[in-house]
Amino acid sequence: MKRILCALIFLMLMIGMIPAQTRNQDTVVQGFYEVSSDGGAADASFLAGEMNLMFEVFNNLFRFDPKGVSGSFKVTAFTSENAYNDYVFSKLNSTRPGAVYLHYTNPERRELIVHRTAGVSPKVLAHQAFIQYFRGFIPNPPSWMRDGFAIFFNTLSFDKAAYTLNYEENLAWLETVKSWGADAPAIESIMMADVDGIPNNFQPASWALTSFLLNNDNEEYHRILFESIMLLSKNATAEENTLAITQRVNSWIDIETFKEDYNAYFAARKTFSDCIEEGRIAYNAKDPFRAEIFFLEALTIRPNHYVPYYYLGLLAYEAKKYDEAEQYYRSALQFGADQALLQYAMGLNALSADRLDDARYFLRQSSALSPERYSKKVLDLLARIDQAKR
Image 1 (cartoon, one colour):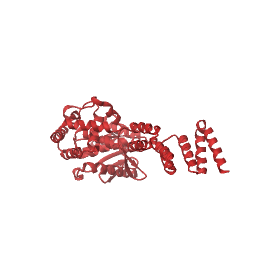
Image 2 (tube, helix red, strand yellow):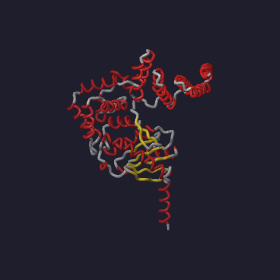
Image 3 (tube, rainbow, N blue to C red):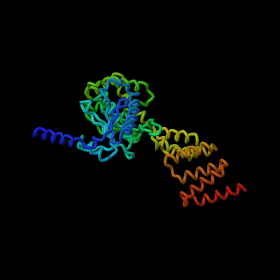
Image 4 (cartoon, one colour):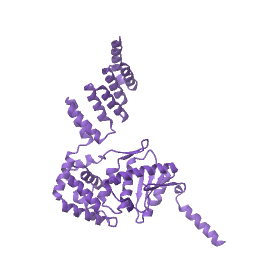
C-alpha cells in the first residue's frame, strides 16, 4: 500500500511539473508540421497551413530534400499571453516576445513556440519559422546565413482571407547599412563570424550580404550563393560549414572585387525616403515623367504606404486621367492617408471629370472630417457646382 501511495504521489508531482498550458492543446499533423494549439484543432490546422506555405517559400530557394528531416517540425501555439510566457519561461527561464525557436541536439526536442494574437508582429513568426526550417536541415549553419535569411524572409505575411503569403522586400536596415560608409563591417568578418567571433552590427550586415548575393545583377554572385548552400553539411559544425563556404568563395572571386561590387550595389540602392524625396523634387519642378518613375519605385519598396499612391493620383489628375487618379487616391486611403485630404482630392477629381454628384459627396465628406481646413473651400466649390447645373 505504501508503495502504491508513493507511486501516486510521484505521478501527481510529475503531472504538476508539466506546464498547465500544455494539457489542453489540440494537435494536428499536416504536411511538414505537427502543430499543437490551445485555440483548438481548427486553429492548429490553420497555423499548420500557414507554416507549410512558408516552408514552400523557403525551400523554393534552398531546395533541401524534405526526406532529410526526421519527423515533423513541431510548433506549439498559445492564444493566451500568460500561457505563452509561462511555457517559454519554463524552457528558457526568460521570455521572448511573439515567437521563439528552441533548438536541441535531439531533433525530438526541437520546437517553435508561438503566441497567437493579433498584437504580435507577423515578422516574429516568419523570422523564427525560417530558423526552424533552416536548422531542421542544417543544424549548424554559418551565422550570417541564418540571421541574414531570417531577416530577408521576415516580411512574409499571411493573408487569412485569401490563404496565401505576401512578400514585401525587407529594407528596414537599408538606410542603416548605407549610412555606415567606411565604417561598415568587413565582408570577411561577417562570413567568418563563427570562426573569428561575432562583429558589431552583425545582424544588419548579415542581411546586407544576403541581399547583395540574391538581388544584384551579376550571375556570378548568384552562383556563389547557391554553391554555398550546396556545400552546407548537416553533420558539420558552424565553424566547418563557415570554412567550407569561405574557401569556395575565395577560390571563385577576388575579395577586393567582391567588396567593390558590394559597395556599388548599396550605393545604387535607393531607400523609400530617397524615392519619395526625389519624386517630390521632380513633381515640384513640373517634371511628371521623372516624378512618376520615383513614386513607382517607392511602391516597389513599400507597396502598402499611402504617400506614393497620393502623388501618383495627383500626377494622373494633372494628366486628366481621372479614373486612374481616383484609383490611386482610394489606395492611399486604404493604406492610411489623411481622409479629409483624400476626400477633397477625390472631390476635385470628380468635379474635373464632370461627375457632379460624386464631387458633391466627396467634398462634403472632406468638410465634415476637417471643417477648419475645408469648410470654406467646399462651400465655394459647391456654389460653383450648383451654378453649373442651372
